[in-house]
Length: 122
Image 1: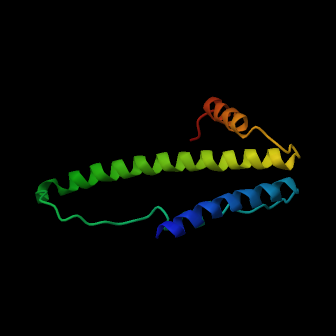
Image 2: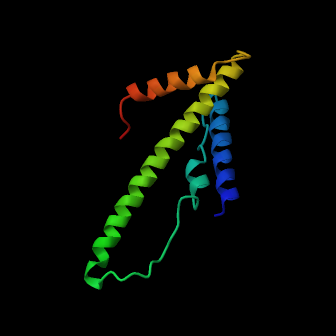
Image 3: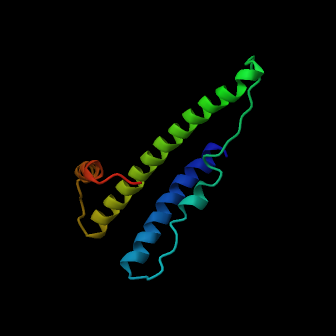
């Protein structure tokens, strides 16, 4: 995927979260999926090859270390993405409540505190 596709994926995530929230607020018993997994399909997937001088007997160990690093990076990216989506919803709620000039920084700081004090997800 090129950068434009990735940016559009991010915008699509925001739109999906907003649509899901609207359905829930409207009392829709079956709000459906956020579309999150479908939108990310391919966005974070990539393959690469490396022509290196790693001896064959160490190749599996090197691959394992690289996989661990990529998995940790993906976990961190996903947590940041959740924060962005939660922040978006918080700002939308303030505007929808007809607060014409919400203090966005205060809203996001409050949300950050809420995330910090919430029980960890499993």
